[in-house]
Image (tube, rainbow, N blue to C red):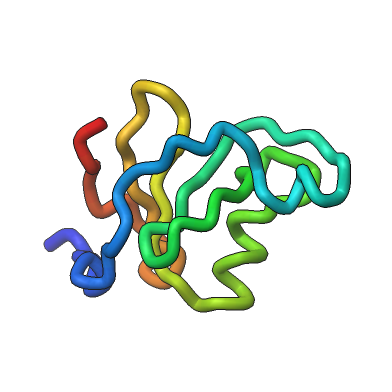
Length: 90
């Protein structure tokens, strides 16, 4: 039986108009892809980016779910369960 995510009930924010990493802008760095925290709306850069701000945000806040903030992508990632529990329609 597939593992299920127990954190989907914590989704409060599902989309953003931001097209930049908040933290990279502050430090003058660049990013590869953007991720949206589904708990608070923080936009951070992906793990392929030098600073990995989305993961750092999880490590500080323990907000479990992110989604891709890239155009046309709707997948969700749960840091706690380490699974992709589905998608949020774009």
